[in-house]
Image 1 (spheres, helix red, strand yellow):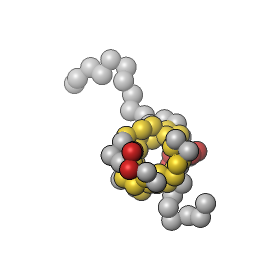
Image 2: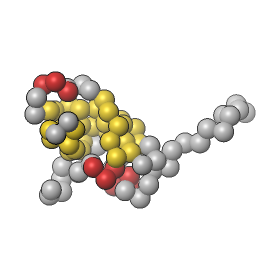
Image 3: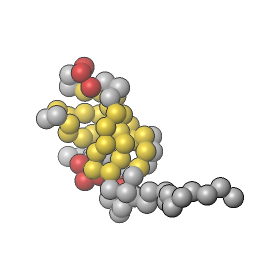
Image 4: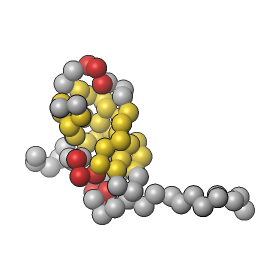
Length: 77
């Protein structure tokens, strides 16, 4: 068996349980509302790729966003 040198897979917090990999989410980044896709889940945040932005500057940009700042598009703000 391979040695992982203490690496443990991230365990998302209870806020992270609402989201899944591949799910579309809204969030605010650089004072603009963004639409992105969850690429990976971490303990307290998610790696999100922006797919739609108010300006075209952030299209295909990847960032890390706290679960508390993510909004499911199917729910009301």
